[in-house]
Amino acid sequence: MTDTAESDLVVIGAGPGGYAAAFLAADKGMKVILVDAGPRPGGTCLNVGCIPSKALLHAAKLITDARDAKPLGVEFAPPKIDVNGVRTHWMKVVDTMSKNLAFLCKARKVDFVSGVGKFLDGQTVQVNDTAYRFQHCIIATGSVPTRPAAFFTGNPRVMDSTGALKLEDVPPRLLVVGGGYIGLEMGYVYAALGSKVTVVELTEGLLPGVDRDLVQPLHKRLETLFDKIYLRTKVVKLEEAKGGIKAVLEGPEVEDKEPVFERVLVAVGRQPNSRDLGLEKAGVAVDDKGFLKVNEQRRTSAEKIFAIGDVAGEPMLAHKATYEGKIAAEVILGEKAVYDVRAVPAVVFTDPEIAWCGLTETEAKKQKREVKRVKFNWLASGRAMTLARTEGVTKLVIDPETERILGVGIVGVDAGEMIAEAMLAIEMSATAKDLALTMHAHPTLSETLYEAAEDFYGMATHKAPSKKG
Image 1: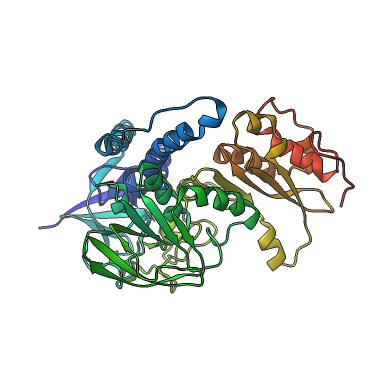
Image 2: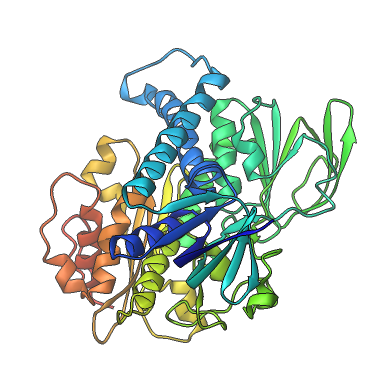
């Protein structure tokens, strides 16, 4: 027998977007039900995504930093890897953060319900044995790894990103199918732990769509960490072989056409988690890729139902979901709010990191938009030199007439921490002069931002003078 309950707002999906929306709505007096298929709030990002992967990446960086210390006069013995200990660390982090979110739900009187939500109509969601009648609903069900049927035939040696996080062992040889950010991040982890990693990417470069000026330094470093990187290469098929998985490869630089690997990570993208929600009963329209169609208020084709985060379209980033969740909650509360941002930051947590926001040079060319680009190489950064990490580059994309900063890209140590200043500059319509006149602490990597801005005028302190172009 189905019970019934009433609520001002039902949020389906308790990831960074869902719980942010639920918390804000509750803070402003709404009765909120927060639904998630998992046992505790946090979603993909916390449980099998951003947080565990970054914990693993930190462990990997400790290993590579120790190895790279020799030229600085400090030499360490080879590390002893306790795989269980590495895995336990990220599990403890996840457990702590999950408990904190559960506490915050109780503190805000948000009713968290573990179960799969499915629409019965445009104002009712069924979860387990209860039908929740809502005034408004926010769908925040996120995304799932793309699992090509040809690769996932049931062999446990073939993993998606979730499986790779389990770190069941450190395989002698690992094949990573896909040179995007997930493949490179996890490939870096396994390489640091001792695997010989081969990355296969179908396109002409790693991180397709990312500025080539930023990718080049990373690619160069990864060549020293990975066993092989194959571009313009296709994995025709995967077959079971003695002791592992045989991959049939086609590409211009492939030497061994049928190598065998102990494990394979398939990281060819993610897709919206929009199936089996009963969307047709709720009158919610979906595009041909499975994304829910939303307007600038994040409202779907059903007036009372909103959608945020990965399920509502690219880019699939946790912080975008959080931002959208708060917008949707404000709209539901009757406030004047729309999703109107000038930029969305993105970070690839490899070593070095890559971070960017706003207009890229590639996008400007596609739009046939005239821009001026300036690059400041970290070879001229005192802080980068002290770290022995001078491969970095800070790049600005600037409107030549207004001198407004349109986009920023950074590759180098802690690039992800530096991109926040770039975001503020873009959102505040700052000019190159504004950035150049902002005092930065010395010696820091952030100085490369203002020196890049100075270089727009041909007067970067630590670079030979040039004419403004």
